[in-house]
Image (cartoon, rainbow, N blue to C red; front, side, top):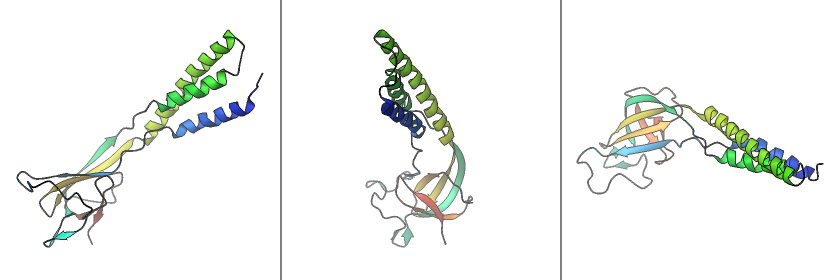
Length: 175
């Protein structure tokens, strides 16, 4: 009945691997805005000049002006349903003969897709949660907001420096 036991074992291992099928969490990011009329010559520092001092002004230093907690909802990608359908179809194809084999393949594919989508949905819900958004008034006149998952005790009025780049920036208290 089971011609390809190794294939079934491999398919079951891949099915349990579906638990890793979830979109990665959003990156922590830094968004900069120019106040009206400021720096009309091409925007903000695009290089890696973080915590660099120009003319005595720390370009990445500032004061927290607002803090808010934001909801982060992960979405499913459909990858779990596709992978589940493939695995279910492979397992279903091991049973029956002739048109019965085609039927078990179809049932296996549909069942695998449902199971894969459910697993991916559960993982997405588990990865969802809350993050913090900090609005910072920079010393050079710019404004920025930094999103990160943790709040190590920052408060409005704290002096901070932004470390990292636009897609991986983090706040640190100035010492």
